[in-house]
Length: 299
Image (cartoon, rainbow, N blue to C red; front, side):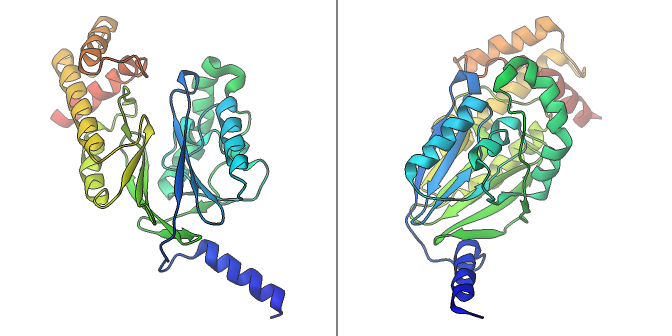
């Protein structure tokens, strides 16, 4: 092996090492979309020698702005880590990569959901977002297992596969470095109304309890929507979901769907619980899915 080959090999090991890591300083930069991008968060974790992205926003405008934020840091993109398979978290990967061959990491479940639902999601949502919907989406290129760690410039990221929850396949990424952090994806939509249309709220509540344990020692929790904060936001999300399920159960009375008038009632009651219009359109969208979920649990 010549000296150049040796140096390149050592560089690869330093970037993609999955064994013991050396704690290194990292700075988390949050990109938060406005209402046009449904308030989705993406994060750029600046390491000593590069940047690791967590999620990538929904729209053309936001993903290009995220790329511009990356370029302003003046460091190369090392990897993109995906938390789950909803378009507001992976649609922007193509613009973020800008043609570079950077690994896009996800669990097998997240990868499967993206590939199986991408066409249907485009058909469902492109009429609303029109030209803001990216014409080309980039899917994961590397599958990571539950509990697997990857290290970039001494900053370690460990994925935890949660299974169904807010989406059909959720995961969270724990960052060990200085500081430590937990990237929640949509396990928490902080101070925003929740997407429950995938119909896994029971599993979501279980996931919250699991993530509470993972959050111990994390300096900051970074949600998929809303402001970063502490582990208290997990209990807040639990309270929101519990109230939503109670309201749907009360109105459905065991039925698997609600009338439009009943959905309006759910919306009004959830806005009493959380008086904001942030993602308000999601409240009635998920009512039938949750009614069906609750009815099936009684059988």
